[in-house]
Length: 262
Image (cartoon, rainbow, N blue to C red; front, side, top):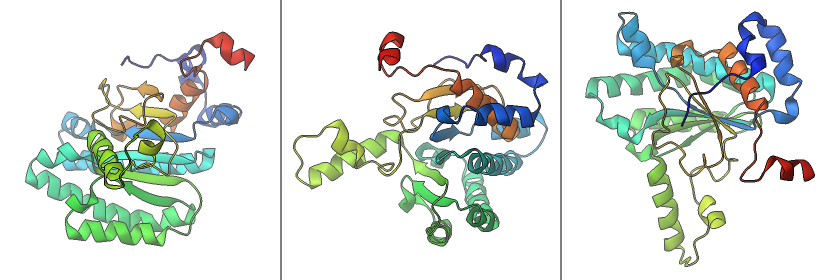
């Protein structure tokens, strides 16, 4: 997986105002990614670089999530999925895990009103049964409160593992007595069954891996990897990522000539 390389128009994007960049992105609305997935990496390093506690980096990262959702609503993005807490993250120090669970609860309570006013629907994927009762109940309450909305679908991947997602899907099919497992019926049993596959995956902090996130669903997603730490990834950076995406050619195994012919 290679680092993203800006196309020629993006190389000088620092010279373009946010408003102009927004209009440029909107002018290519036919190439707007329908579903954007995020691996939000670098919160701890952002805080350490500033001599701050790791949790403060996570708190600042919440602001970035808010800006992504607000921008997504403005741009007409249909779905955004955030890798909030991986199955492997339970291995972290108990103090940090507890603080992250508290941050999850406080964030949900604080943001649910604005999400509702923006017509956002909230969903989760992953093993929610792993969560302590309190954050689990808070999530369920927020999901119910926003269930009447029909705008952007905000999905939080919590205690999520891409491999376990596939294993659970296979086991569901086996439990139904399905003997001929294929791509279509397996995809229908995954946590993301009601979502289109991501068109664009954005990973911050420069790490070149997908870290067991949506490993089935990302098969043909465009990857945008930036060295920017997640707390510094804001609306401007999202616009640049989308602009970069809009200038790519998605071939899905075909040649450029075949795409023109079709």
